[in-house]
Length: 84
Image 1 (cartoon, rainbow, N blue to C red):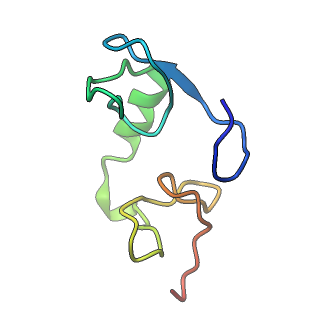
Image 2 (cartoon, rainbow, N blue to C red; image 1 turned 30 degrees about the vertical axis):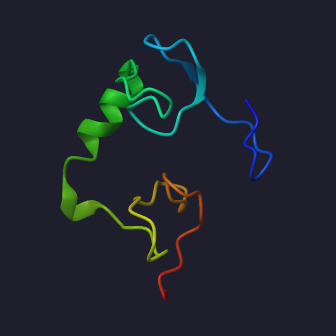
């Protein structure tokens, strides 16, 4: 599925509860609120991130995301700027 904002190809998932095709933005369906199935890869990533002291928070003050290995926020997609 293509992101409506940036035009970039995004991961999609089908909600088992309502059947909607969704962008993978989090662990819950943003149409009906049902918990989405998680893959093994996602569970592994979550367990690796359980050490909160190693997390870098998004530099956008309005975002609650964390920065990934590529220096991009996992929630809003903005690059990390340490001076912000």
